[in-house]
Amino acid sequence: MTREEVLERLRSARAGFDARVAHVPDAAFERPVPGGTHSPKQLVWHVIAYDRLMVDRLRAARDGQTTAFDRDRFGWEAFNDRTWAEGLVHDSDTVRTTAAEVFESLLAEVDRLSDEELAGPMGLSARLDPAWLDGRALWELIGIDGFDHYPMHFGALDAAAIGRES
Image 1 (cartoon, rainbow, N blue to C red):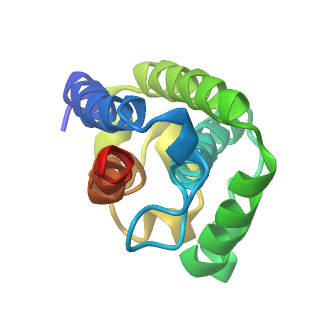
Image 2: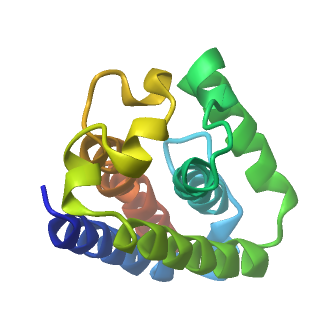
């Protein structure tokens, strides 16, 4: 997948996510979604955490720093548990603002990649932690943690928006 295709998929999937977040009223933003255990605010913070992790990985690789993060060593379950808890402590405005800022940073970092770096271990992608890549191309991991991840939360956000109307 080319850089332009990755950027388009990120923008498209994120537009769907952001549209759903926008339909959740303020009163429902901090309450668990109907039938769920996490609030829309926590869902957004969870997405922020994955976007930020990708940004941090790409910047660290570019700067020659370690790209081994706890997410890779201790598993996604522990990482998710931490992000759900972190989402509770931030106010709604901060969460919304941070989400937009971190996503823009992600787009900027992906835009700096070449098609070759996205496709295989060369340049920056050769410096990424193999535990994260797990034998996959960088574009695939951006999909798993980004454009394929956002839609996983569409149902919960839709339920939060519908729950407010009933």
